[in-house]
Length: 599
Image 1 (cartoon, rainbow, N blue to C red):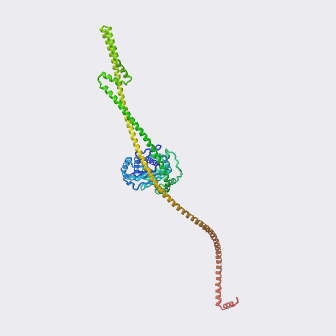
Image 2 (image 1 turned 120 degrees about the vertical axis):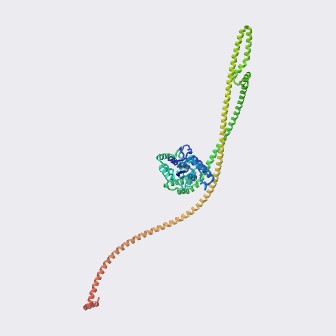
């Protein structure tokens, strides 16, 4: 079973997303991974992100960008760099659309790349059709100007270029043209028209139709954007030409192929487009200069941040080395204490190692320093006891008491030693905490190193972008030189046209003289015609009079004819009488006498 693919093609910001969204709600598959919508725009863009990325690579393989105004090279699909992307395109279609029976591709760059995707889709057993969406050029220019520094002359030229390339790239396939205004005013009729004219074969159920119609809202026309006033009446006249072209497209009857109309619009816009090129190039050069200055400022800030990061990294390294030395010294002291087995030496080393502990270690040192004095006092007390008391039991008892006191003092010293060990363990815990802090510092240093690498990569990217900008500037300079040559030839053509205009003015003056003579001849002719009309009226009256006279003469003639007939009858009678008389002798005599008689 054959599958169907619809290419939704339009200039950027022309409302193709609304048509694609409606068809997606109606059951067509627009992809799986979509481009994120800009801030303030509807959430769904219905533009496949892999499709956008591959189209960018296709344009780059031809040396073009999305806003380039030159046609793609001849036989560009046969280039090795383009052919190398065919396998990726096939994999993209399989990953994004799978086995779906009705799919749609919505992306402005399809105006140029449509022939490539038509070839890949037909190779995957798709019947390919196209819907070209057009919007009022002034609205497209306002929307693009809201999102970036786009010269209105270039935006109008981009609108015309996208329209021409879309028409050229979709020849030979079922296609239709949709105006954004009509899509918002009559969405149901437009959807039915697109499905029928493109032979898309999509059966839209009632619920899907309602969802599709609900997705098309008139407020989408200015969703999240302010009205922007463009300069009225551009000196080149390109705005008037393309607006008139849109009006002609909107008046096309359904089912009419737009080829001739679009070719006529392009032909009519060529003179205005030639005049519009210098203003937008000047604005683009100014925008490029501002962008270069911004990049230079960003580069200086990045370098300052890099220097600060390097200084911070150096300080961190010094602090890390200092901590390492302190930790090594503390570790050596702890190990020396743990290796010693002599209690007195250990006490001495403990006193020496913990001399810096001002409170607890000081008390331990004071206790140890008072011990010889206490021993001397005990000796004196024992001597006095021996002298004063002779009783051995009393002596033994006092000695026992002294021993108990000494044992209690030893226990107190042991307690102080335990307290010192506790402080030593706290010191070990502090060492462990120092190690943890060191690890945190190491992680922080690694993070700083990663930030430094990212900054260096960003710096390299900015340098690459700067080089690309320089190349674009050089290319723009070369284009400007070519355009200056074209401008000089255009001025030459203009001088030729001025000469032709002078000749035409002379011919027009001669024609005016001939027209004056013709007007005088026409005046005389009118006078002659009036005289002829008067003569005609007189002759008509004369003809009527002659006709009346002829009728009277015909009546007299008829009367005379009747009289002549009567006289002829009488003549015949007289002739017969005379014949009779001539046959008799008397009659002959009478006739002879009558003939001889004087008249």
